[in-house]
Image (cartoon, rainbow, N blue to C red; front, side, top):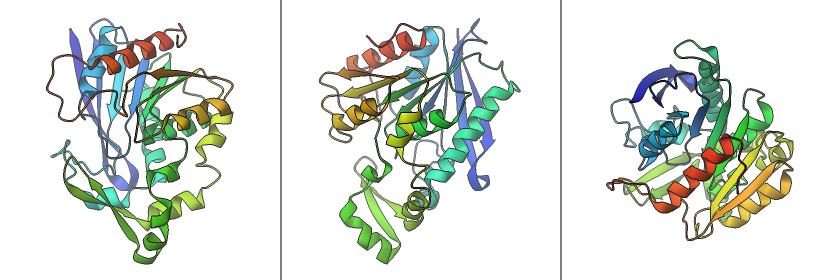
Length: 280
C-alpha cells in the first residue's frame, strides 16, 4: 500500500513550507529522494504526485515540498494566490528553505532518518540543488532534470535596466494568465552572493555521483546548459532524452492515467542511478 504523509515546516521569514512524503508499506526506512521544484513550480504540479508514486513503487521514499515564497498558500496549494510572496522570493530564501527541509529529514523526528539522500532538482531547482550538493555532505547523490546552468538565465538581460529603474519586472504566466512580479531584491541577492550562487563554479566542486537529464527539444532551458554543467564536473553523467521538452511531456493539470513516455524514461534512469546502476 502506498502511504502519503504531510508535514508543514516554518520556512524563510516565518512562511510555511508544505511537504509530503510518499512510500510503500514496508519501506519506511528506504533511501529517500528530495524533489526540488523550479521557477513557477510547486510540489503538486502536473505529474509530480504520479512521479512520487512511481518512485515509491520502486522501493524509494519520495519527498517533495513547496518553497515558502513560491506564491502558493496552504489554502491554495496549486494556485499562485500570494503574488506578494512570489515577488519577495530570493535565492537566499530558497537555500534557507532547502536546508530546513534537509535538517528536518535528517533529524529522524517524524520518520526514520534515511541512510541515503538524493536530491532531484528541476530547472531552477536543479541549479539550487547543484549548489546545495556542492556544500552539503548530507547529500549522497544528485540528479538534475532540465537544469539551468546560471540563475541569470531566468530573465532577459536587456530587462535589467528597467528592473533597476522601476524596482520590479513582471513575468507572464501563460498557464494562469497572471503577471507574476520579480522584485529587484532577487537581482540584488544574486549580485551580493555572485560567487556563492555561481552554479557552474559549484558544479566543479560536486564530489558526489551526479546524473544530468535533459530533453533535446527543451526550448525553455537549452541542452547547451546541461552540457556546460557536465563539462564542469568530473562526477557528472549526461543522459539526453530524445523528443523531450522542458517538462518531459507533462503538463498542468495532467489528466491522463499514465506518465508520459519521456517522463517515465526519466524516472527509470533516475531510479537506476540511485540504485547504483549508472546512467546508461
